Length: 158
Image 1 (cartoon, rainbow, N blue to C red):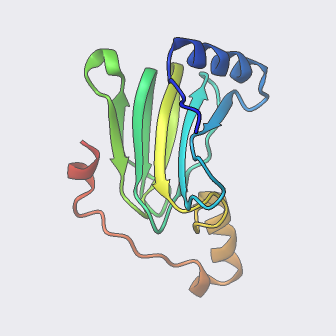
Image 2 (image 1 turned 60 degrees about the horizontal axis):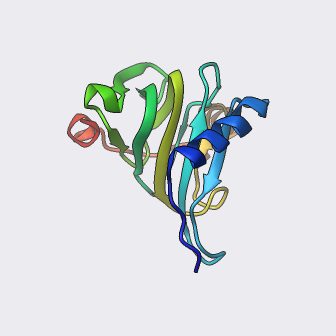
């Protein structure tokens, strides 16, 4: 197995790819084989990138900021903002854990690279955007319900 060093050269190369991306973000997969049932990646993002409000119903999402500055923004089931956390390593805020089932997005303030980890392969983990949720709810309200507990939300994020 070849080792990977996450250094400034890797981040610089990732930012170059990000600048060329229409989405203004670029992922770098850190899984080591196709049987790995998780998501572990670096995600380089530029200000202006749009990450739709979404949730992961079966897993919390761990986010560690390697460089940059962004806000992790949490929402209720009606898309009302309920919390905002500034993540910036130079300010001493290195990351957060978004609890399973909580609607969230990021607002990138300066070029940022984060490490993201959660259980479940992308596209197979039940994750959905808020727009997908509302569309399902409009078609069949009984199919769009999902219960989540926000009781420990602030403790888990802070």
